[in-house]
Image 1 (cartoon, chains in turn orange, blue):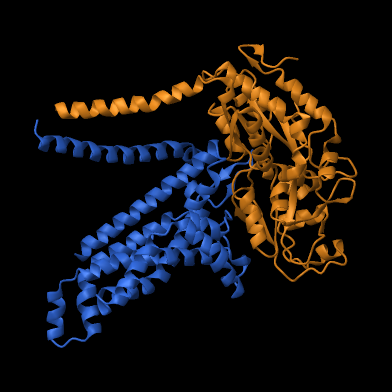
Image 2: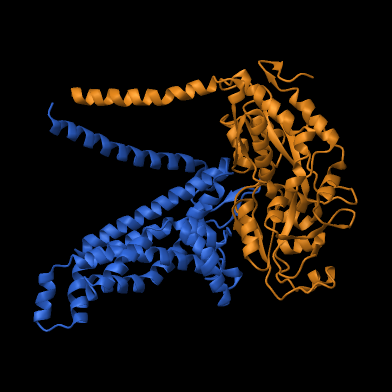
Length: 356
Length: 283
């Protein structure tokens, strides 16, 4: 029995040794603070780039887990991250369900592109009706007269249309289905809006990278993905008809044009199908969400300050200028001002963390 | 206290941990699945809708149960003749030869390859090949998934039956040969009957592996949440729908995924029990 006791004591000693360094870590000075974030994959190419730039210039360590918008919201609910990221803002009922009040910080504008794989076809135009027909499964062949009449001069092959959708829940799906609901009554009735849907047709792939990979590997495929995933893999994207009737390619300018509408003070707005004549219609903000009161779960004030300082930098002109490198559109100046104003309402023990 | 007692206590303790973990797993699966079964009743198992749209949420497990059973049974049927011949080749016909040694090593190697590697190969090599043969849906679907599953379980089943066949006592075989039996007579009248329960156990284990296989299937089956309406159409399996959707799921959807996990657990349990029963009967 004595031996057993000695073994047990040794195990406990080892265990407590293993714990000690962690406790020291959280008490380290501001320069070595680690911020943990998780959420949407849609803005991940942008976040990966600017997060590492911020780490290089300030020493604040940042880690971002691309686990999907829903995962980001859940991680913030569980209070295991410093801030979450989502492409779908929380509506009022979802806000109430959170354990404490949260705020939304828009970080960048992105487009959901309609990507397709048809060798030799490089300027596909999709009307609202065609999008409905393809994603409802009514048009099954690429050389369908409906597609042909909308794309005179294109040599469309006799190939089946393979619709590729997200198999996991996704903010990208939310933006796309929000747009489809606005342009198609049939869609609104039968499918609706959501982060995951009951698809009338199509096969699923996981995550933006999964859909992009499947499209690029599958002739005749069409699907919706965050724009950077299409551009990075050089997948063709369709011109989509906007509410003014123009066919618009997803470019930085046309996505920026979508954000010319009046943005509410809390920035929670869907930008799909805007009125502007030159706007790409399937675009939207992506947000970072955090608790308004930053003193929770024994977080230090340094940790809280580092969080809001970083976010304040993220919406600054310097960080926003980087967005175009990865095919996102910077926030309009007024929206960035609104984001900064929201950040100045974030408190620690009731005291605002940033100066006015 | 002597070392014998200490060993006893440690062993008891470790065994108890296993029991505790298994029990805890069942408990948490059942607990997590309760909301789904409360909302949908037993109909959850037989309903074929999977509608995650907020406001009209409705979940049923039938498409995934169908996908899992169809792909696994097909895979088993494809793998049966191949792995059975391979195990006879290795365990009897060419036993002890250099060729059998090389082949045996290869089989063991294949059995140890992670499923994601099979998935990659299936996605980039097998699928385009099948498309070239005229398979619809760009090669995604139940058929392709079954083939990759079969390839994955062939080495598994071969390796297990090979071991059993090698264990058949030489005296038995020699007795048969001395009576003038041919090689095929020895195989089918002596070796197979005496190794029968072991071979069947091997196939049941392989079937169990096919049921729970996730990654390679997800990459090839097309992940359409409907009952496959043909051999070449897309579908989804229980393991693959969980892997795909757990990250974003909450509330009723999460509970439904856990319920599917529980069903998979039960199906695997039933298969294993059936296997044990068959072995007992044959012995």
